[in-house]
Structures are given as C-alpha cells and as structure tokens.
Length: 127
Image (cartoon, rainbow, N blue to C red; front, top):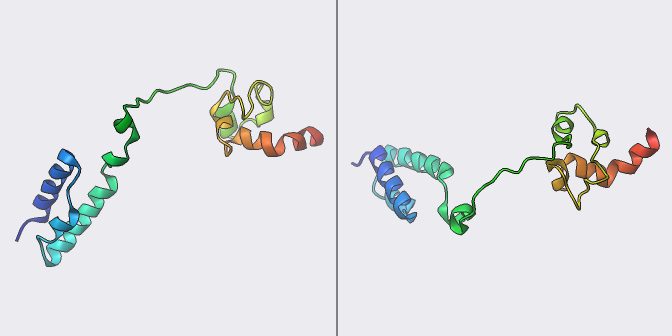
C-alpha cells in the first residue's frame, strides 16, 4: 500500500510543475480507507490550489495596483452607516454612475449608485 500523504505530495509536485496532474490516476493507486483519505486530501488541495488556467493576472501579465478613493468621497462613512449618500459633497454633482469618484458609485449595487438611481428624488421630496 502507498501512503496517502506521500501520494498527495507527489500530486502537488506534479500539479505545480505543469498543472496537468490527474487526481483519478492517483486515486486508482490506493484502496479502502487509504483511498477515502487520499480523496479527502485531494479535494482539500484542489479547493484551495490556484488554477493557473483561469488566472488572468498570470496569463496576461496583469499587475494589481490599488487606486484610492477621492479624498472628498465619503464612501467609508456611508458603508459604515455613519452618513447617507446625500451627505457627501460629491454625490450627484461630480460623482455619478457615469463618472464615479468612489467605490460606492462604481457598481450598480454600490450604496451611492443604488441611491442615485432609485432613491435620489424620493429624499429630495421627503426632507
């Protein structure tokens, strides 16, 4: 019998070398409780292992760079519930879904973008 831990190490080395390791081929090398243990180990590894074929940053040479929000943007306070979107000086003027100044306005699900699209005029009437 072959040790499941040893087979897992072999699988990881092969996977990292070329990304073509076949889990089923490794499972066929063991039987019984060792097979169940190896299957669990492989599942755990594969769930966390980076899949190079789907890694756009590696494939296309993309490097991450952080882009900070505008200093006048109140997105942090809005997300924490300390302020409302209309409390931000930029909201609805220079900051719109077409020209976002902060992360809350970038996505249609962002707090400010949703408020701009669905709640902006309601607040003007009720306040």
